[in-house]
Image (cartoon, rainbow, N blue to C red; front, top):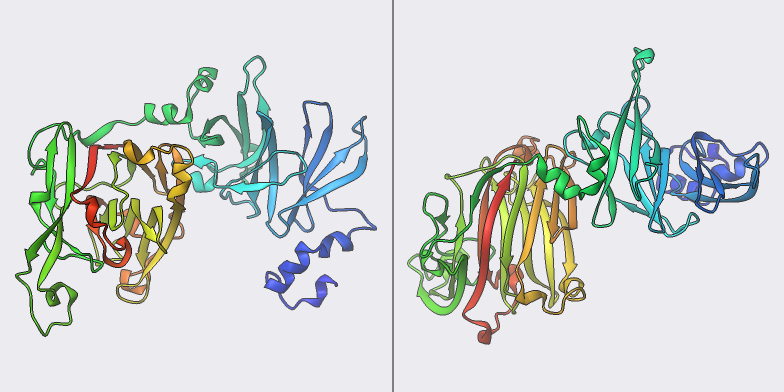
Length: 465
């Protein structure tokens, strides 16, 4: 198969041919292309030549002879058709990490992160290691090299170059410490830093620059602070079984309790001949509460933390989420920092974002659905404890965490509304908070009668910017 046999590149057939070695075979006689290369010497003295090859489509790692003067003939191909270049590699605790760049000419792009238990793989791709402003552009640079700091264990510096094609003599380098969060490298922009930064975690470093701008510690007794929270009322969304009312939310013993009860509530909007689910029900069989900061406090970007203990019985649908203040749903944007419900009868925790399509009430979702068993495997008593849900929201990304485990990362370059939302980005506008405990409905499942009263407890809500 020859490259000229394809009418267009990037077709599925062409990519399959690349993956199967189209360009490797073409270059057997003349030798493989070698661009944007680096040399990595392992701790056993073995050296490897890492380079972009196959018309810059594929990375290759080739073993060097003991004198580093030639190749042994042993090599592997990584991510055929992935368009990676500018590889920089290091090793920590037996794991190999590699940061690369995409191929966009002179323009910076989003860094890629890979890891492997052996230089020979298998290599796994992770999310962009850069966090913060201009993370999607690797801080206007491209990876060049990673080197350890002598005498400081597990301390590595990321070196990257800034190309200036119109003024090549003014090209610059950036130098950033590589920190670690959840076992993976993290790069955060710092105007200045010292080697002491390696003594702190990535989260500690980030939080040092953040200030608490709003919080509710929920330590009072009685109703939630009316200057901060309002209530939803009645049947509201998703054909849920509960009737929302203020009576089911109260503060006691340092936590906010949202309590779902099995009790009947007459529906004042009932109409026998109505086709609207909010009106065709004569009564509700359950009550609960949903509180929010709409019209009281809204936020644009920042770090959001909620410490809570959620109910996990059948029918429970607790959530921590935000909505944009402008446009109808979903063009206003929805961020689900946490949802819990059953999918196909199996409990899941979800971390999502949604935005508008070209059809009314039709959302585009970026959703991560993690089986509840994943969390129980870490702690069998998980459901009895409080946990911290966090959102890091910047101009480039929304990152959603549970107890510092990254559950989902949503690049905001992708979250563009359809024509109903005027092709705007709903995550570049202020959002307000919602905390609620729904029962049943389209996702909650069949309620377990013995689980009531069901309690969703929130210890605090904090926003840093």
